[in-house]
Each structure stands twice: as C-alpha cells, then as structure tokens.
Amino acid sequence: MSTETASWFIVLFYFLIGGTALVSGMYFIYWIFIELPVLLRIKHEELYDYWKYPNANASKSKPTLWRNK
Image 1 (spheres, rainbow, N blue to C red):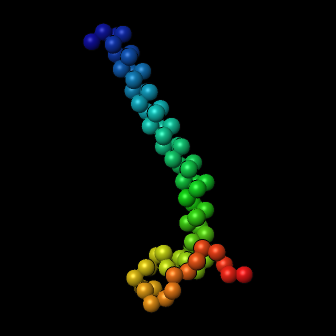
Image 2 (image 1 turned 90 degrees about the vertical axis):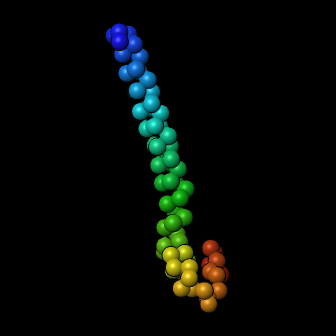
Image 3 (image 1 turned 30 degrees about the vertical axis):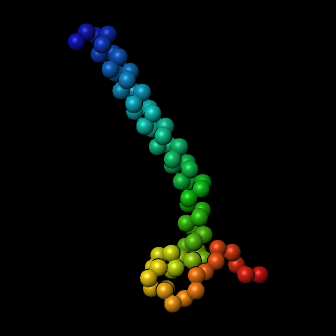
C-alpha cells in the first residue's frame, strides 16, 4: 500500500469519526432541549406514577398534562 493510499484511508477515517460525532452531538442537543424538559415535567407532576407504573394505576383515571385551573 502506498503512502498516498494510506493517507486517503486516514482522511476517510476522520470523516467517519467526524460524521458520527456530528450526528451524536445533534441528537444530544435535541434530547437536552426537547426530551429532557418533558421528562422532568412528567417526573415533577402527578404524571410520574402513571407513566412509571402504568399497570398499578389501572383503576385511576388518566391524568392530564395541564393542571385544572
């Protein structure tokens, strides 16, 4: 294998690692700003028990996402 071919493999490897890091970073940012606030809201309201243990709450009515005013 020539030096030129080996250097192209190194470049392709860096593109592969960079692309994987970019996609992982974008998904992490999505999760932090979209998914985490919803899970925190569920955890801090009455929805937590209903979401975490759905079979234990079969006799109760389903809670709503918004509080009744």
